Image 1 (cartoon, rainbow, N blue to C red):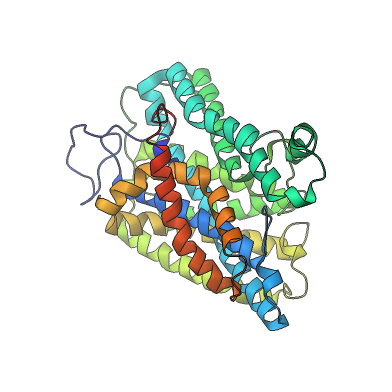
Image 2 (cartoon, rainbow, N blue to C red; image 1 turned 30 degrees about the vertical axis):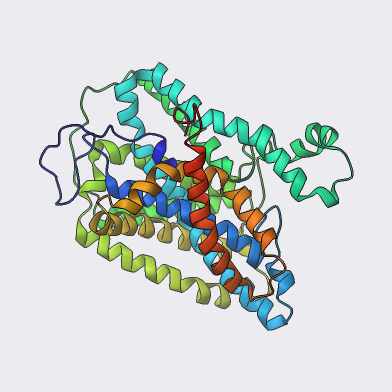
Length: 407
C-alpha cells in the first residue's frame, strides 16, 4: 500500500551489504520491504472480503451469515472468519505503519520540512480528500440505495457525514499516516535535527527487550480498552478506533528508530526464525484461548473493559504482533529480496490497489451474490478474481494523465 509513499531513491551507489542479499539503509530500495507492502495490501483485501462473507465486522454489505442456512454452517463460518480477521487485526496495520515510518526520517533528511510536508499532502492528502468527499459518498449511496429514502443531494450533507468527516472506510489508514507524518514534522522542527548521514548502526534488540516491549504494549492496549471498546468508532469524527492506537503509535515510533539503527537489515536470522515460530504458535493459540475463556457464549469481554479476558486478549495480540512483524521481515528478506516480473508489476500498483479495493470487492460480491456456496469457499473464489482485478485496474488508473505525482 504505502510502498509508493516514500522509498529511498533507487539507482544510488551501493556499499557492501550488511547481510547477504540485503542493502544497507539509505542507499537503495529494500526490495523485500516492497514485497511486504504488497503482501499486506493483498491481506487487507482478503480481510475485508472475509468480513463480507463471514459477517465478522462492519462493511457496506455482508452476506456470509445469511447464506449459511444451517446452524452448524453458521458456527463454522463465524469461527473461521473470526480467527482469520482476529489474526490479521493483531498485526497487519501496525506492521504497515512500522514499514511506512521506516522511510520517513530519510525522506525528511533529504527534503527538509517544506518539501516533505508538501509531498505528504499530495500523496496522502489528495487521495484521502477525494475518496472521503467524492468517491465514497457516491459509492455508499449506490450500494445502499434501496434503504436510502432521499436524493443524493440531501443524503450527502446530512446522512453521509454522520459517519465521520473524513477517513471513511479503508482510508482511515491514510489519514493516520498523514497525521503521524505531521506530528513527525513538528517534532523535527522542535528538535532541529537534520543529520547529514544516518546515525550509527546498532545491533538488533535481543529477545529480552522484545519480550518486555511486547508485555508493555499488551498492557497499554489493555489500559486503553478499559475505556474504549474494540469494534466501535470511538473518535467518530475522524473514523478512528482508539483501542488499536497504543500499537499503532508504538510501531510507528519503532519504525522511525529502526531506520536510524538499520534494524530491518540487521535482524539476525536466528532471531527471525525464533519469532516466526512464536507467531505460528500465537496463531494456533487463538482458538483454545477463546474457547477456554468463554468466547463461544459471549466474546464482548475480550473486546475491552476492566476484566481479565480483555487483558489476556491484549497480551496475545501484542505478542502475535511482535512475532509476526519480526518473522515476516525475516521471511521476506530471506526469500523475497529480489525483483521478478510479478513483483515489478505489483509493487508500483499496490498503493492504488489499496485505495480502490473496497469498491472493487464490493462490486464483485454483488456480481457473485446469486451463487450459493459455503461462505469461505465463495470467499476463496472471489478472492482469486479480486486480487488481480484490483491490481489490474490500478495499473490502468496510473496510466491516466497527472496520476503519477499522486499515485
